[in-house]
Image (tube, rainbow, N blue to C red; front, side, top):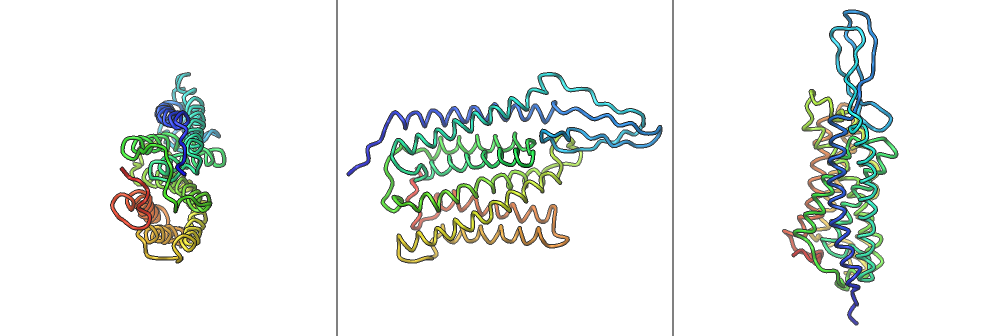
Length: 323
């Protein structure tokens, strides 16, 4: 019996997805204004002729700690930011939460429209993965005050959603029988959550490599490395669970735990790469840039596994409906 699609809910989901893109873009502008203009310098008094270190933006709201020398001594005060710049960060956070809510409702209405879990094809999976990335950012901000990554995570989410809408979109409808299983809620959900955390780490790693020492308005390398490591420490066991759950699902669906399908191979390669990063990070003397490069290699494996395998390779996972 064919599944009846609620066209109204499906249309609402599409409209909310577009609204989410707009909200993330505006939020990104707010975060960028906060990075560029919204952080005031602290006042530090030193003796005449001694250099002073002035902390710029190391506030409790999540801006990174950056130091500037004061070669002339005395009292060092940076010009106070304009009032509109001080409001940029709270507005950006509010817009991010509003976009996150719209994003969540878009996913839920897509699922309700077809009566199934809303990640049965590549379009739905990428939309859910972007949602997980923004959720990871909001969690890390609440827990670790990482607001300084807001501009970069929101632009990544907006670009991901734009790519999904432009190149991966398919009409809401039923999925192949293999996906009509409770394992979708277990295996795919775990993969989405882990992917969101890994995207946070990947954004931090890219900023770590391109950041110049003179870029005092950007988060410090220490802050970036700390956020990336924490995200991977949380995400790695979830990805491990997703791989194990996928093997159990494969046994139920195809009668074997492992069949060297391209998706299975790259999921395992991704697991090895992140395990290598964690091992490298825990090894004395292998931190900073070297460990971050390993993390970005793992991130590249993740992106190819999530998107590239379905577009360029075949296999049992090729039912993902890439247009």
